[in-house]
Image (cartoon, rainbow, N blue to C red; front, side, top):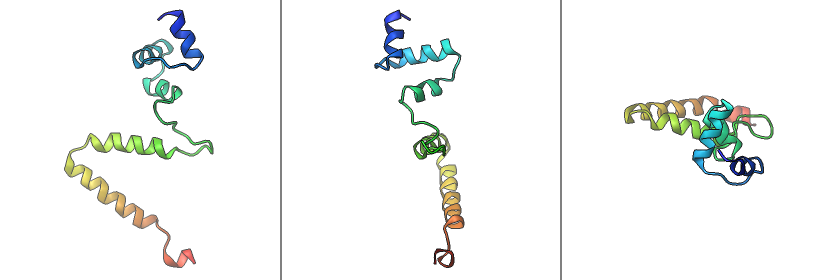
Length: 94
């Protein structure tokens, strides 16, 4: 990797993805972490320190899309059950 490329990365300028992959190897960090640092992937935590909704959705999509369609439907059905379980009842809203 050239000194110019390293300088660009340190200054926050755009570098190509293959360079980001190389940086991950050099720094002995997961590629995903480097992509988050480069703001290509959403951060894991919000500014309030809670898990980021965008990060959760991206991980959920990654998992669900790798499942067979029948399992995807099962996940969706379970998600609906959980939503109903955790929705406040009319009595607790008042």
